[in-house]
Every structure is written in C-alpha cells, then in structure tokens.
Image (tube, rainbow, N blue to C red; front, top):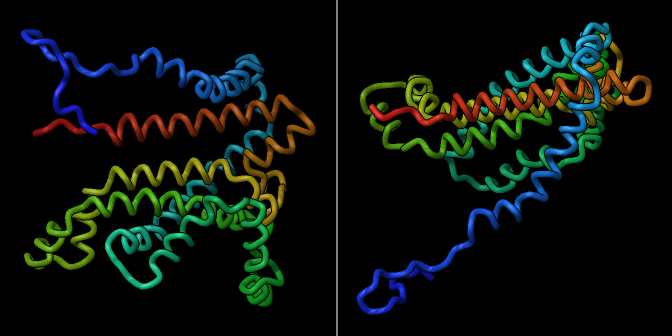
Length: 278
C-alpha cells in the first residue's frame, strides 16, 4: 500500500513514514559479505608475493594457464556463434514448445558437471553416437584439447544465451521494422541495429561465458581427462596440486580469482557504464 497521505499535526509539514536506517541493512548484510570475503582473503594471504611469482615459473603452472586461456577463448567464441541464433529466437518468437526449449537451455547451468561430462562421453566417446563414427575415420575427440573446448562450451553457452536473450528482447521491434521498410535485409538489420543496441547484454554474456569456461572442472575431467600439457586446465591442475603441491594449487587459484574478477569489473565498470546523453 502506497503512502498517499502522511499523518501530521495541523500547521506542521507532513512526517514521512519511518524506514530502516542504512546502518541496519549493512548489519544484516555483513554475515554474507564476510562469508564470501574471508575465504578469498585467506586464499590471497596464504602465499607471499615472492612465492606466487616463483610458482608462476613452474612448467606445469605455465602450461595450465596457457591451455586454460586458449580453450576458454575458443569455447566463448563457440558459445557466441552457436548461442546467438538461439538467444534471438527465444527473445523474439513465440512457438509451441518454447518453454521446453527455454528449460533445455538452462539445464546445463543446474546440471551436475559430472553428469554433463558423462553425457558428452556417451555422445563423443569412442563408442558414442558421434564419436564411434568419427573413430572409424581416424578422428578422436576424447582426451584431447578439442574435448576440453567442447566441455567448456557445453557448460558456458547457457550463460551467454540467457544474457543475450534479455538484451535482444529490450530492442524495440519497430526499429527493425523501419529498417526493413527502408530495404535492409535480415543480416543488415541484425548487424547494424539489433546487435549494437543489445551490445551491453552481449558483452555481459561473453564475459560470463568466458569466466565460466575458465573455471570448468567436472565435465572436463571426465570427458577430456587430466593430462598435463594436453588437457590439464587450471582447475584440473588445482585438483592435482591439492594432493601433490598445495602452493601450486593456491597460486593457480589466485590467478583464476583474479582473472574472473578483472573480467567482471571491466564489463560492469566499462562496457555497462551508462553513456552520457548527447
């Protein structure tokens, strides 16, 4: 119920209703903020800067970083190419079974990563639906860098689709209709009107997909394995380092957190910053 009239004494200004003070909301928020901040702080304070620099020179650390950056970039590119048509379809079209398709797209987000990896193995493995045929012609996907990219794409593409579909839905259809009346084809409409107007959502989807692909673990270890220099990404190296060398695991964890934080900070602080009115 909205406060249309405030009670007050005659001759005095109305007194607004009492609200919670900001200090109260800070106090209520503090437990969760500490719950998130303290583990990250402990991670960064575990090793000295000199130890972190020394661990960065280790071959297994450099290989894991290079492989992760390479595969996550390819996975993000695959997510953009494969996910953009689906995002536009969900944003602009109503059709039978749309709810089922929408749930299917969101399923990898909530699906246990181990289940995702096993599912990919049943399709692309040597005896899988597609992998069996590829194996007959001499092509192998499992336990290769390609398998890492496939696993990362499977997990990350949903985040790109969800963010992009929101951006496409916010573009006024009348603008596209006006361009079509002026003679623009579908590609010109999309590339010059729809995509530029939805660029903030698209950039958000790219950042989320890249960060999620960079941190993918469960599906990768089952589908691609954990082979140093070939399929061992940073999360897999952290898993192995936790058993063999905790300092290496901490170093890679710090790098992963830093990468993810910087990407999100760039998107929210630069790409999503409100542009000044002309």
